[in-house]
Length: 372
View 1 (cartoon, rainbow, N blue to C red):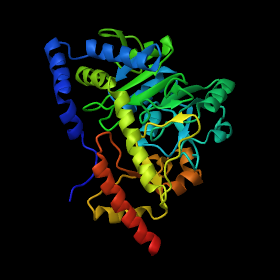
View 2 (view 1 turned 180 degrees about the vertical axis):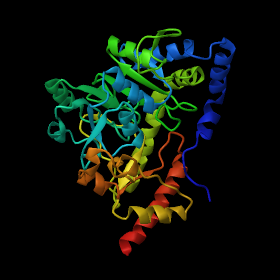
View 3 (view 1 turned 90 degrees about the horizontal axis):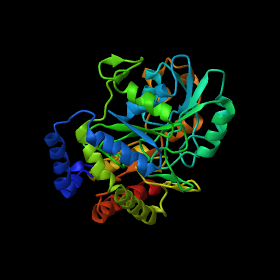
View 4 (view 1 turned 180 degrees about the horizontal axis):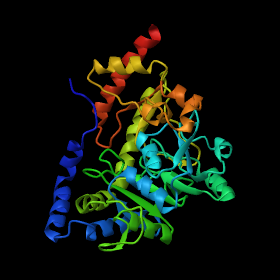
């Protein structure tokens, strides 16, 4: 039996000549750290988003940490975010010394419930960190309005939303800064770790560049702390430059996969993804819901199909975050949906034939559950 999970091997086979040329161009250049590939990618990624600045960093987690620090977030501050996210979002907040404060999620989109933001603001609140999860955007107008009213910063976590739009505006262009991950499975993925922060603010960009390079602006001279060794690698940057030109194609392929799922599974008991009004979804993940989630996943393993759950444990329920004051608060929607959501295979190279097999096996499993 073949396990249907994402692998870079098919993408690599299709793009091998370009990827190897990217690697060779870097090795032949003699500049392996913060060279022309990094600066070129930064310029192109910023231009793609219509913003002035981009700083490449070593991974998406540090992109969040450095974005927060570049905006002055630190010990004693609170950052409002969600618990239905990948743990690195919250790990990044705590790395600054700040404390996350969680709000619940919308039961339809599984994104931050912006109606709860006002009730979460207090005298220690410094920043709102919306997570554009699964491939679509949090409603940013109320986030920005609240931030302006209270003098807060806004950092967008765009690790799962490369190319997503809201009202025609690209994810990452509404707040003070936006953090991206280029982990290999992302909509725009590298062949290893990588990340970036985009911003329209020159002061934030200057801070980011100092933060990622030990606190230095000039070589060997530390200007200010904190400082990190958090630089985007030249090889990954050059690969990302090549792949950025294909990003629209990757998104179109993901939307085609989502369309086939929607057409084939719309009459089942699964709750399929809902796109919020005004959003253009890029389907980093295709997240569905069913009260018998665990049974479905277990039975599909018998067909050689392994499915992911994003995410089975809300962050505030994890032992590593038990010390947080907000970990003791109840997030009923987040907690309920954590037992029901799971992801179907979603990647650009998923062929209709392989997808049809997933759909056929899933429908068979659902029929046995409904008949029980």
